[in-house]
Image (cartoon, rainbow, N blue to C red):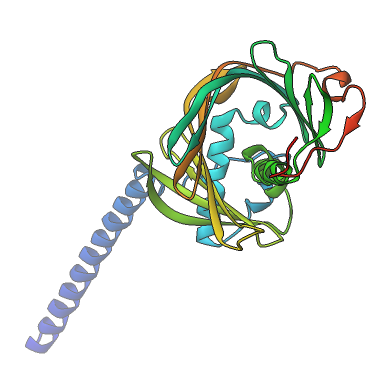
Length: 304
């Protein structure tokens, strides 16, 4: 065989050897990839947001894509769960007993009053004062009365206005009515120190451009404070109202604040210590009815 033929054969054999080695290497690479694919777990999927019952007043916010609204929704969702979930949302009435104190310029005025409060959703309330329980404030809808040994008088117009404002901004009213409305907005406001606690703040804005801000403990998910502002009808100045909730206890499946403090423009105005609470008592209709003839209450500043 000539020299050129021998070189050609050698080159051919070398090329075949290289191809064989490449094929063997490729086989092992594919085999290793197959084994790796079988042994490596699939990437973890993001945690799903806890489901919210369709009957809950915040359910219509669940599909939002806005990060601020989604964060606010999650905080409110956890808050309602912490308060008792369906049990809390389906409370029909409450009976509370305790002692209340009034404050003026941050100082207590008086020795405090015993009280018995009977509340029925949505707008009936009866509060009895003194040991004899012979002074009664009664509110039904948008009407208020004061019942004493003198008879039944219509509530003072200014006090009635203050009461209706507090009722319309109460936690029960905001959760059940405001949040359920389709045109209500919710926003996450970040964190704030409240009562020496770092809280998450959520603002709830209704269709009339009225708002309430809730400060919620991120660990217990319970509301610590509720704040809102309003313009005084007389001097047109903007006033801030706040309620601080503390000393929660579980009563009939509902987390209940046993201490409630009210503030106006940063000054304490009243404090309530609750000693007994019962839910869903089933009050008789007569609990919220007036007795005898009703006369008009003298206006503020007039002699009674």
